[in-house]
Image (cartoon, rainbow over all chains, first blue to last red):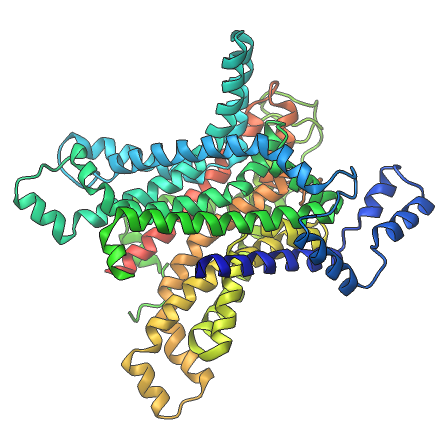
Length: 307
Length: 272
C-alpha cells in the first residue's frame, strides 16, 4: 500500500516534469503545423488561443491537473482525438508485442543463462556454456534497429510464402518481438547467469550436494527458486522499459503503436500525448516493480523472512 | 585498494586476450577516425556501387564513399557517447555523493528525485530532454548524459554510504577535516576503481542510446556521418546493399561489447 502511494507520487512528479519541460522547451506545435502548411499564421494564433497555450503556465497546469482528476487526459493538438482513445488504440498493437517479447526474453534468457553458468566446470558443458555466454553478451550489445532489420529481411519471403491469415498475423507479431527479445533477453540472460553462479556457492546448495543431489544442468531446476528473485526484479524493470525498445522496433517495422506514437508526438510537440505516455511509463514501472517484489517474496522464503 | 585507475598498460598486458582485443578495436576506431580528419574527403562516385578498388566498401545512396563514412562515423559516435557518459558520471557522481554524505531531508529529497527519474525508461527520458532542447548533436549528448545520470547516482550513492562508515573516514571527520578534503582525499580515491569500471559499462549503454536517438532522427546535421544515422539511411537501400546496414550495426555492437568487457574486466580486477 505504501509502495502504491509512493508510486502515485512518482507518476505525478513525472507528469509534472513532462508538462513543464515540454512547454519551456524549444519544440512549438504551431511551428510544426506552419512548416507543414497545415495552417496559416492567423489560424495558428487562433488555435493557440483556443487551446489555451498563450495563458500563464500555472493556469494551464491547474487545468491539466483538473482534467486528469476527472479522467480527461486532454486531446491531441494534431488529430484532435482524445488522448485516452489514442492510447487504447495504440496499446492494442504494442501490448501484445511487448508481452510476447518479454515472455521470449525471460524464458530464453533464463534457459541460456542456466546453460552459460556452467562454463567454469569440466566436461562438455563448459564449451557450450562459453559459447552461450558469448551469444548472450552479443545479444545484449546488438542494437534493436539492426536485429529488426535482419528479421524484416526474413519476414518478406516468409510472409509471401504463407497464405493462411492467422499464421501471417503470428509472423507479423513474432518477428518484431524477436528483434526486441534479442537485446532484452541478452541482458536478462546475463543477469540469470550471474545469479545462478552465485546461488550455486551458497551453503544450502552445498548441503544439498552433500546429501547426494546431482549437479549439472538438469539440477538447475532445484536452484530456480533461489536465483529467480533478482532476475525477476530485472525482468520487471525491463518490462517497463520495453516502451523505449518499442520506439525503435515500431519505426523499423512500420507498425502502429505506443512507441511510434511517442516519437511522432515528441517530434511534433504534441504536449498532451507526450505527458500521458510518460505518466503511463512511470505507472508501468511502479506496477511491474511491485509485481516483481511480490513474486520474489512468493518464490524465495528468505525474502519473506526479511519483511 | 590503492590502485587508482583501471587501465594501466602493465595490467592490461597481463590480462587475457579479450581486454586486449577490446582495446585494439577501440584504438582502431579512433585512429581510423583521425585518418579521415587528416586526409581529404574522397570524391563522389556512382551511387550504390559494390566494393571496388577506389571505394573499398562501395558507395552509399548519394555516392559518398561508404568505408570513409564508416570510419569518420565511428569517431563521431564515440565522441557523442564519451561526452554523454562523462556528463552522466559527473552529474551522477555529484548527485550520488551528495545523497550519500548529506543526511536528513536533503538526502531524502535527492533519493526521491532519483526514484522519479529512474521510473521513466532512460531512452524515453532522453527523448523528452531532446524535445525540450531541440535536435542537434550536442543536444543528444546532453539528453543521453542527463538521462543516464540517475542510474549512476544510485551506484555512487551505494558506494559512498559504504565508505562513509569506515574507520578512516570517521577518524578524519573527528579530526575536524572539511567536507572537500574528505571527499577529495578519502572518498574519491576509494571509489575510483569501481567508478571507472561502472563508467565503462555505462559508456556502452550511452553508445547504444545515442545511436538509437540518431537512428530515430534526432541527431545533428545529416551530412555528418554517425553510425545510428547511417543505420537509418541504410534502411532505404537495404535490398540493394544490405552490408551498408550491417557494417555500422556490427561496428556499434563490437564497440559496445569491447567497452563492456573492459568494464567487467576492471570490476573483476577490482575484486581481487
